[in-house]
Image 1 (cartoon, rainbow, N blue to C red):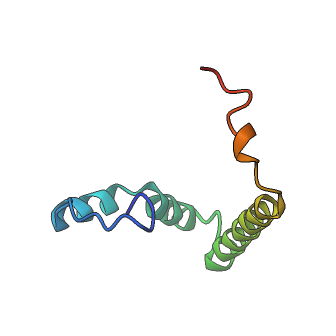
Image 2: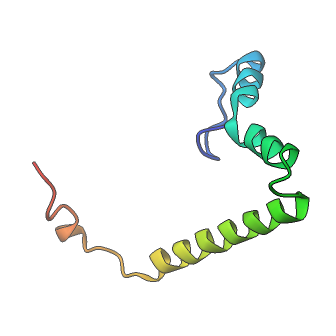
Length: 79
């Protein structure tokens, strides 16, 4: 998968993208969780919904904050 949605990964071959997808730990972990009976499909969907709600709340919190004044944006940073 791309590093972020704007990265079209034109520099990668199809084989490289497939190999990276095969190494993606999330699908492997989900399969392991299901195989071991730790969560079923409904349980996984519930966890995904909870995580999505937490992310949405965090984004909403950040977006509700005032923007930093450009003149003070670097205050407190090391040189």
